[in-house]
Length: 72
Image 1: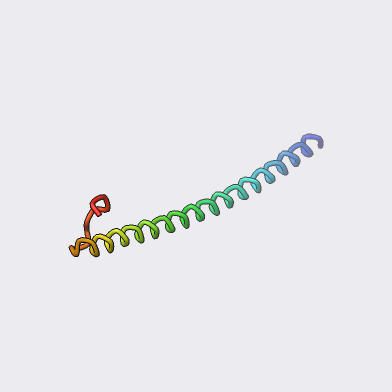
Image 2: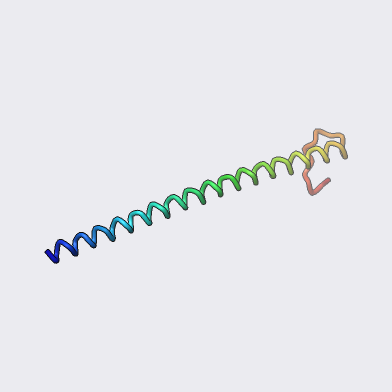
């Protein structure tokens, strides 16, 4: 009976550990989603920056607008 009680305690501990692991996995998924949102924001910002470079280049050079930013 003592062995059975010990086994039940061990099983309860395992279930608690599993629940903790699931919470950690959920947190990681939320963190990954946040990272993806940040990456998407960075890509949008990069696109706007490139767009700005091309517009400035076009206005300054009256060319095709593909001048390198360092040359503007």
